[in-house]
Image 1 (spheres, rainbow, N blue to C red):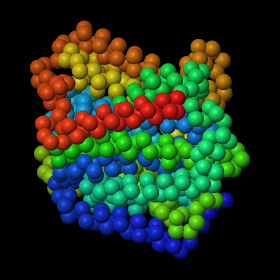
Image 2 (cartoon, rainbow, N blue to C red; image 1 turned 30 degrees about the vertical axis):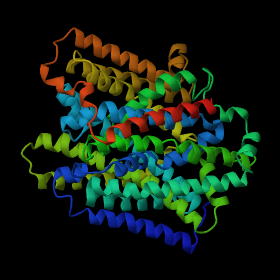
Image 3 (cartoon, rainbow, N blue to C red; image 1 turned 60 degrees about the vertical axis):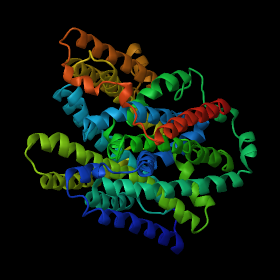
Image 4 (tube, helix red, strand yellow; image 1 turned 120 degrees about the horizontal axis):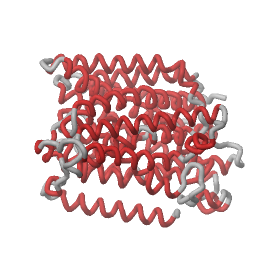
Length: 531
């Protein structure tokens, strides 16, 4: 049954929408060349970068998926969030210096400089297709469920409104509009989530009472090897592979650090985002456990978060939380629109028309953003097909079949001078084949159990364990093919890891190092507490 909004709630949401649209209009005139439109002129500060990294990552499927999975199995799903803190440090201290030094606009462009054009085209095509087939569809489906439960809008109306509003400010202002709306949206979604969590904790009788009246294993983040979703081996060895792909090599995320005014700001932004990523366990996973508790165990899965919003929040507060939900969805959707537009313009259009001037590139960027908006609208009739009750795990499992070969190619490409383009494209294609094969047999096994025992075993291996297997196989193919073919030219040396290039000597260096060490210690403490 759908919820409803008071006049005050509606006014708060309207003010929020007007703010994000005004930001898009403000940056319209400031995005006259490709660097301004796609990388915000490379002059963004660390606070905006960190906020954008966080807001881009947190989407509607996090509200549904993290809370929903939390209501079923407790805090363990939060491993993906806390591991991200460490991977963000890896992005800032290891990957970003070489991305910025190379002067690239896109991750496929970086792969071409390090390997060859085949690797670039592979990553461009895979990235664009994955954005369209997973990010758009899952974000709109999750957003539709949330808004239907909380506001009472039907899924089609919800999706149309979200796509059009997000599309307008993304199309007009480019990455500048996306990043600075993310800054606003970060505060809104965090404030709204904290308010809901505190009210829920109060309703549950406080922390101690919540822990005492929920299953004990809900509070243990490290699960047995046999756990179906989060075995400790998969979390420790498999989840970081997904994290490196997502946080360190995906255009959707990395485009934010490429927009930094300098390396120091890029690194400070990743550290800031690392601290922010501690929060989802407490403001998104914990509400799922709260919903399970105060409903007497009757509410779980994707219903958990919207149930809390509709049953606990008074007028006014509800409007803030709904604005936070919209902020999460719109920030991720705008990032997807802008990143795909960048890939289409820089990796496709500019390759076909190398003499295109700046005005033409920006125009095509806006046209390609419009195409993505249209595709988003066309996806709407099909989003109901994604009716998995544990959406976040579903999303992570699909990513597990795409990410390992890409992570392997970037990691070895940064640290080994011997791996070459032939090895890279062989590893990428091998990983793709094995990933698609696993996805196909997994789906078939769910529809009708497979009769072949070996295929049945492959289809039922935990997705994180399969990610480890894919990473190892892709790495072996990369190293083997590279070793029996010609050595890369010396031109790649500037793109290889060199500790002298990972920082800029200035007054912020010690601050960034100290903040990074503190973040690691804080995470170790949290893992010990919730072990």
